Length: 426
Image (tube, rainbow, N blue to C red):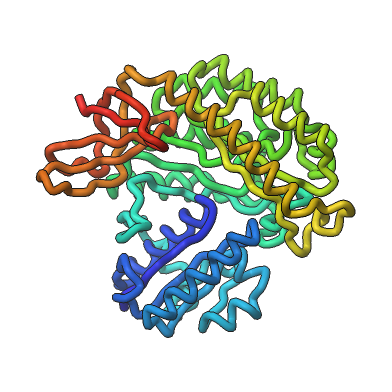
């Protein structure tokens, strides 16, 4: 059979869809890059915002319009709204059943995929990634008041170290130049290992083990909640194989809003965390997430967020207009802000982030750095337009005389062109 895979939302969803691809291939089936050529479609949905839920429905309808009758909907939106998902797809697989999605669909025993390491091949089509996304953890125990993800994915659970190492070794053997560790709350990795001598195995143990037991050239963390982090964690980044980019979701720069969000951090704690990272990596790219217009956010609290964001001087980030998600405590809070106020605050935050992002990029103009090429497009001239990422997550575009996809080149960064940095391959 020909299988089309699509994913909406976070890098964890990308990691899961890649594993589904591995298992279908291991069972003798073909992964295709377009829905028009497929017999079956699997859509890994998202519901973190209303827009993400709407996008999930659009992707499923798009597969239907392409002529696919056999559609499997899984992921967070399908888990939270299974009846609506069933109206659009033939099969609905909840998150807690996703690990065995392929085995159950093909009527195979799940153990068949444990017999030998599965070869990682990048997905075809627009979902192709040179970087391998490896799921190391799922779920979260913090229960932030705005977050539907903890409802959809449940309590925190960690994958065993030996499974993670095997997956990374397989990815490297398949040609991956970079591995991205993904999870809902990476900092909690190991805390649910009841049979371990230390019930709170730190994230540093995972990173050290990966560096020691695999030959992965580049290792990156996808997103790291700003708590459950050991004080000396960032010392590990003295190893050049760890990419100098940290995504630390803040959500608000006001302590009172952070308390209403039930975020397990404060301005002072976040400030200290950023300082400790920059002490080891002065040019580290620190990005974040901010929610604009959380319930009962006053003008003073929003001003605190703007001030704190400027102080942290982020390299970039995602700004989300607050949208109430049914089933979360925040959706039941009084004084929900009107859409006009929420959108206005989103726009103001975006202005600040655009300025900070531009300032961060400008620091590196004239520098020489390594770039991993993620896409290659042939031009009319016969040359190839390459696009890829630096270690500190600058998106770079350059021209090459041959396709350099999945290769790492030393590049001189020349100038900024909208959302990319133009470079010259040395």
